Every structure is written in structure tokens, then in C-alpha cells.
Length: 276
Image (cartoon, rainbow, N blue to C red):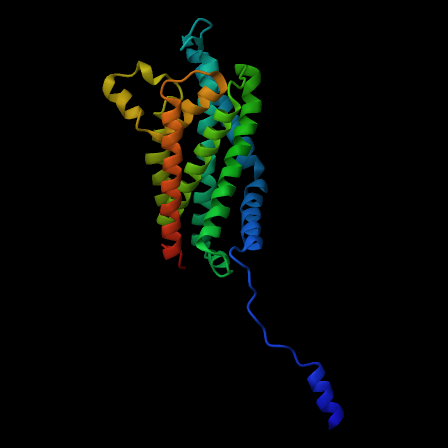
């Protein structure tokens, strides 16, 4: 009996205690970020190469239709003016697609619970998803830029402006994608956001033309379009040409990013439309 008691005591497990992650669950945050990045890398043909081909087709069509050798905008060849807008448009659309599709698919398939159950806070959830969207946006920007440079002769006028505006554009659309994914209950809702909000704002932002050529009303409307500030600031970074105020655009995009971040965080804290 004494021997059995000793054996029982030796192999008795200590009671489980909750793991202390400290102020932030860095392991969980990094794992979730990696999961979201690997999700788009596994289908890189669709998520990176397809935007490159689509952008080159846009560039070819507009360059052949409007890019006559004597056509200039702001004192630069049309194709040089066109390239930054196309790069930024592809960047923002893919940043939006990454976060919105990930959340929407997880909700429809019911595996969103796999993200909600681990000890990950709303802030960590938001940071991981938003930065994964930014990562995809930057990867697409680099791929499209490398592909289009031989045809447009794109150079860099200001690295700080180029990096700031491409990052802000990716972040803002990544956050809008999170909002769209949270709000949407089916793919039709997500398609509506894409078709009636994101795409029109991207096309009416000075991608293919200078807003200085617009009538007064439409010129004023363009100046309140955040996509205009993204494209105009990025175009300034690459070419030095701007149709607006670069400092004002930088401040406006920074404020927009902060406001969207706080809004997303508040919704995630509430679990808005995340419960299966």
C-alpha cells in the first residue's frame, strides 16, 4: 500500500494554470499574420500575377488609345503620368480584397471560430489582418512596378513620399476591407461594396487623367476622394508631378487611417457580426 501511494503521488499532475501572455500575445499575433500572408502566397498566380497582367493590359489599352508621342500631362509623357495611377489602383484593390475575402470566407465556411477562440485580443486580430492586407498590397505594388517600368520609364523622385503613400493606401483599403468583411453576410454584399464604392472611387480619382482638366464641380468632388490623395501623392513620389497639395494629402490619409483603425477596433471589440 505504501508503494502504491508513493507511485500515485509521483505521477500526479499539477493543476493546469492559464498561460500569462503579458500585455500582448505576440506569438498569436505573429501566427495569425503568417496565416493570412500564406493564404495569398499559396495562390500567388491569382493574388499577385493576375493583377500584374490586368494592369499591363490597362496600360497597353490606354497607352495605345491616348498615349500619342506628343501627348503630355503636366509637362510629362502620358504613359509616365499613367503608370503611378495604375500601380496604386492595383495596390489598393488587392489590399482590400485580401482582408475582405478572408473574413467573408471564414464567416461563410464557419471557421471564423478558429480565430475567435484563441487568446487573441481585438487589437491583435486587427493588427494581424490589416498588416497582412498591407503586405499583399506592397507585394503587388512591387510586382506591378517592376513589370511596368520598362514600358513607362518610371523612376523615383522621392522615396519617403513613395513609401508613405503606398503604405497609407494599402492600410486604408485593408481597413475598409475589414469593415466590408464584417458587415457583409453573403458574397453579394461584398460584391456591392467592391462594385459601387471601391471601384468607382478608384477610377474617378485621377488615375487616367489630370483632375485639373475637370469642370469645377467634379474637380471639387475629386479633392474629397481619398483615392485621389493616394494616387496623387504616389505619383508625386515617382514623378514629382502633383495635381493637389501633397502635405494636405499626407495629413488627410493619416487621419483617415487612424479613424478607420479606431472604428474597426470598436467593432471587433463588440464582436460585430463575427459570431457564427
